[in-house]
Amino acid sequence: MGNYKVAMNTVITFFVAICIFGFSMNVAADSKAEGATTANPSVISQESGQHVVEFIRDRDYACTQCHKDEKDTLKGAHGDVIHAQTNRDLTCTDCHSKVGKDHRDGAPQVTKFAAAQTVAGTEKPAADPVWIAKQNETCVNCHEPKDLREVNWTHDVHALDLSCASCHTIHPEKDPMKGIERKSKIKMCVDCHSDQKKEK
Image (tube, rainbow, N blue to C red; front, side, top):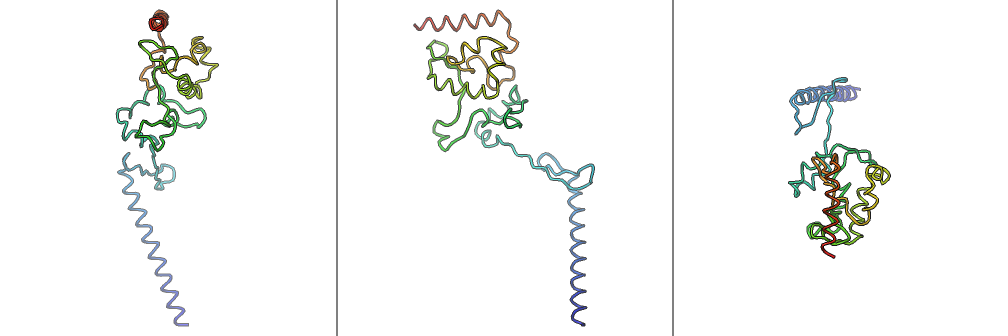
């Protein structure tokens, strides 16, 4: 019976020591959390007083490590929207698709956006209609064709012959087409179509 009492006393002493150690660690963690910053996003919940850790993961981190000039580009019109299908903030890969294993060798899997048209001009080069369609398909995944048609009839006319990036800035601080005056729109049409005629 004596061995039993010694064993129980040892177990109880060990349990009490663990509880005291755990409580002291909780107090230490709470005192550290008071000085939390964005680099260390640990915070104390106001309601419960419990220590809460929030992890902030930048899904564009891999992209912006090399494309450093593009780091702040999504602060424009595309930076403030929620993706219609995923119901979360837009990321680079939502529009540019997969990075792929050949990324350093021309990145063939990445959807690139550039001014292009099926008819050659001096300002915009002629491009493969399939490439133009791939660019535009990415845009109309979010921008409904019906809505685009209602905004301006030229969306229907140019959908297969002109890339969206020919008129719209993809990473805009301010899209040059939004709020453009009628006179400027007409000038753009005339300039572009007369440029195409020069090449014929």
